[in-house]
Image (cartoon, rainbow, N blue to C red; front, side, top):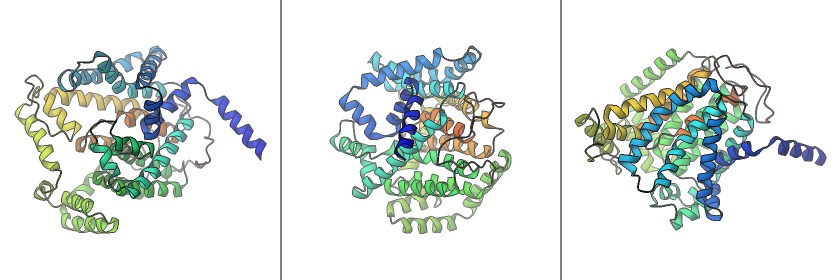
Length: 433
């Protein structure tokens, strides 16, 4: 037994190389709070800057000539958006820091494009992602049980050197970013379960973990997103996208029509989880604008601030005048307020490039409608919260999808399938449910 374990360990070590170790490190640095805290404490953020630069350059240099045109045209709207953001929102006083911000913003696109169009060890990266999310979710839940305000504290600390934030990072407690990132990843577990790439019990386990995380971190929108995504368990995996859209739209209309029942149901859910604040926020969604405006965070008022600014300055927004009055609680609405239809056009081209490169290649695969949902939920999240979530859209989601569908690392619509995954977590069945 000991010899077999040793042999497996040797094979695993031989499987690693500098490229794989770099990808693994970036994934863990992005997801696991204790990793990024330890790195910045014992080494230097400047080293990570170097890793980001090398990763971008490597992805560019190794890009096939046949794919250069696609990559360049995909990058254009992202570069324009980030330039506008730096020049008129964040500022460019520190040239080095500004350059790093641009590279950090673009790195997920470079990484994802490289891995979608070259051979990559998807099952290894997926194993790292699964372990990182599961372990951090558990430590976050434990941290929030011991300190119910832990996730909220991390979301409101003024800087990364805050003593409380440092202590929570060392406990591997995730805040706003991790909590919502995990929620966005949750539908991928459902896709794996519905396509029988993992046993159904693991899909249920992912649901329990995602719900527990959302409840204990007290992020209302995260819990509601998990609830919506969980409906996928009851939808046939082979449902066509158009029928799925009709089903989803019809479900939303029905919920609006039955708003009083939804209020009672969400109130019941709130009582079950024992969190009065979350219960109030969930029921407010179906109780009308007045109920939403009565919430402490004035969420609807913040959204309307950005939308009103956009309506008053629809063409170019307010970035030229410098009077950018935004709510600050929505990436999409704030972009419309700042950059008007110019910003809307850039966002459309960015999301179009993401969908074309990282979702559309799976159009002939089972549960493709669920893939569209995994993409669309991120846009909704960006409308209701800050962030564009490129790490999820361009890196983590494609990695997991390529693992689920066993692609060969050269995933185009006609791409071949890779050999059977060698992960105990995965079942060998391929049929859909």
